[in-house]
Amino acid sequence: MTRPPFPRALTAGLLATGLLLTGCGAEVEPAAGSKPDTVTVSNCGKDVTYARPERAVAYDVSGAEKMFALGLADRMRGYVMNKLGDPAIKGSPWRRDYKKVERLGTERITREIVVDADADWVLAGWNSGFSEERGVTPALLDKVGVDSYLHTETCWDYGDKSVDVPPLEALYTDLDNLGRIFGVEKRARELVTGLRGRVAALKKTWPQKGDPAKVFVYDSGTDQPFTAGRHAAPNDIITAAGGRNIFGGLDKGWTTVGWEPVIKARPEVIVIVDYADQPAAQKIAHLKSRPALKSVPAVKNNRFLVLSYGDVVSGPRNVAGAEKLGRYLRSAGR
Image 1 (cartoon, rainbow, N blue to C red):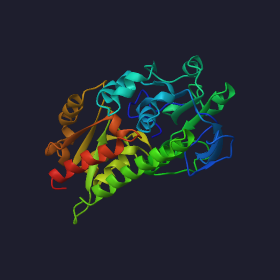
Image 2: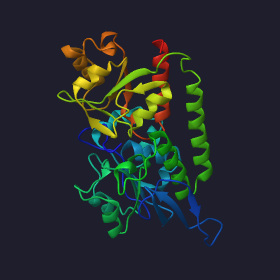
Image 3: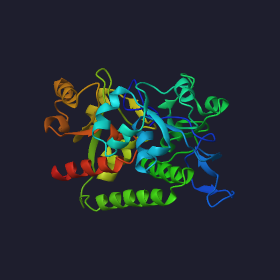
Image 4: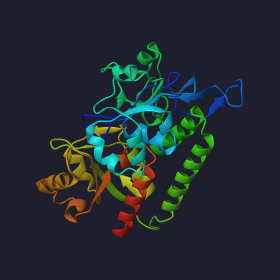
């Protein structure tokens, strides 16, 4: 997920105590007292050591809900989220946490927001929060005394680009690492075990015969559709549901494509990403209005599934999104 589904906004907060994190295991260092004062984790291929955050800031649904799912709302200074994410908040299992934690901004995250909030740690994704062009990067934040952690899902497009973790595994990595960073390892293990178990149960519902159903993710766009490549969460959501992302071969996160490849791929189901800027019904109407799409099986058979923005960006709701899609595919005989 190099870019958020919102072609012009959001995605995951930045700033973390110690540089970057995400990645493999974490190594707890000795410290005075019953609990360690520092922890070392691997984030985007780099080992980072930092103190336990007390004033964390998260960007977008991805960052906020990973924190909330681990029971870390009281360790947060706040979150930043574009207004386009408001419907995702309303439908979130963590609505109470959103109300409890201060919203520090309704557009993109900036260094100014982080510094003014006196944050000590920030959680965001590369090119979906952190950005060279906008002057908010882990290196620049480090200069003002703020540590940061990058969502593992975005590591493929950061630095030496050697870390290439499938989206769902990237989610599990982040939850494990955040559990170690904040000292809630047991809760993180239980959460990840539960999510893995639900995915395993979902796979048992796959049809025994035939090729996986072809699925197209439509986020937005008229001249060119904005969709999900193999590095974006929907790719693994679709796979877990028993389908195949028609753009799963693209070495991209969220990206634009042409209409011709969509028509050629003949998707059987279209997943519509729902958020505030453009109602899902309006997006479906647009797809139906395009003459060249009328022969596409999904359009011809009226097979559209609406998923919340919160279901399709990297976060604990990804598994719920996969379950919804799985049920829809089974109902269509796929």
